[in-house]
Image (cartoon, rainbow, N blue to C red; front, side):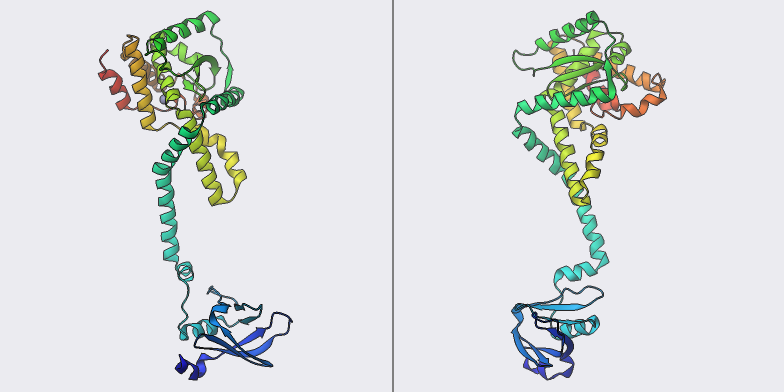
Length: 354
Ligand SMILES: [Zn+2]
């Protein structure tokens, strides 16, 4: 260390400010041992290196070292400063080195993206499960009520089915639900709506199940088919899938707002997020399992669900839905018919023994 002292190029020309006056002192600075020496116009100082806050190396610009007593040493010649520091064995912190490497930056971004992907795929469902488990059922009820109000105002009109027709469907469904072991079915309420989302049904967290007039028409009021759909929706209520989805959308919204730093954008996008959100394949499968359980308990043929899948597919392929209704379907991703049914789901009901 003492040997370094002898080298002239280990002295650096700089300006010194004492922290009390605005006067710049022209000085030379050098390091020896654990001391930073500053000497020049009316200045003669030695400072412990640990009392110096060294500047991070940016690509350009002034280098300023802050001293613990409020003074500072600075130079506009960043290249000379960097060379001086390196000659003295002072290397950049890891952060600076990483910031200067675009390759590292790119890799970090990819890592972040992968991390977010992992959070979305595995972490988020786990987090949502924990949040759902910790949420009292009373919250489900109030969430359901506000969700229904929001959906009613945007997508729904009063049902045009007669009260008698509504009652007939409800009674058939009630009979099937009552066939489950006593006390096992979650609380539910069935409501009918004329809607812009085509033949459809969906469940809200409070157990409200909404069925559209178009769905009743599509299956010619076949109560066994309608019961299969309602049982599937009751499965979503039982597993609290609606609440879980709300939690996930809320968490995703918060993460993006943290990353993007603009909360208003996220809030504005929230309805669209909810519309595009859909239950996972696993959640759909579990709801199908629940539906099959109800159908078996009520001695209704599992093929009733297949009938529905067929009619929905037929309706899609023949374009009975007006083309301008298509975008509306995507507004409610949680609804039964909003996404094409896959072959596995059809096979599940086809292969089930009555
Ligand atoms: Zn479903």
